[in-house]
Length: 278
Image 1 (cartoon, rainbow, N blue to C red):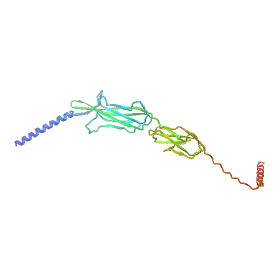
Image 2 (cartoon, rainbow, N blue to C red; image 1 turned 120 degrees about the horizontal axis):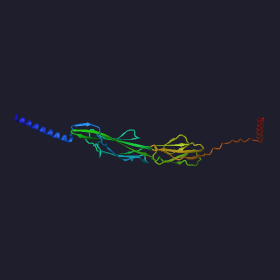
Image 3 (cartoon, rainbow, N blue to C red; image 1 turned 180 degrees about the horizontal axis):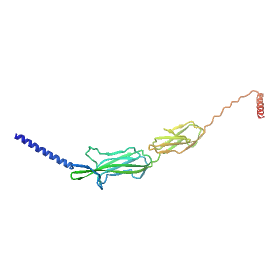
């Protein structure tokens, strides 16, 4: 009986020792017993977003840019990053840059982002970067948590040159055929190519072709090309002439035997003309 009581006592002492050790470790890991969500204290500073590219208020001669920026907590009231996204004016949806995993024990203090953005149309554009982080302060056993959002805007202009279109054929000269080759070059990839003959509605082209059945006379021709960003390039106007020789009519001559028949025919014509006159 005494042995049983002694064993129980030893077990209880051991259990209390383990519980105390666990309590110490828990207190060291998280010394706060209470948590409250509050507004940021006066003077609190949000995350800092440093944008490396594109440069603000800059003109770019290309339809592709690289978006590069860093979000960090250095010298701010934020202890960690909770989430971030950006929205470009030509995009329909937000693009997520970072989202804190609720079940992850790690909270980054800094985050780098790099992405190539292509096929941007000519004109003025902006990119808005939104990021939010978390901070806290303690009073006794209570931790007061708060978060802050920072918004950064970058403005720039795209002024990329349009495609350069050159017509190789026809040339500014006269052709003796109603069929003329239409050959052209474009200095970049084109998403759409069209031509207009004599100011008529544009016709779509896939490649070099032949203009057929052109009537005699003066004609003018232009070729249009659009690149992937929607920039329009227009060729110079080519003026050419079609002068296809006309076929001569065949005249049937009937020889009438005998001079008297010819004379009679002439006399008949004269009498008819006189009668018609009177």
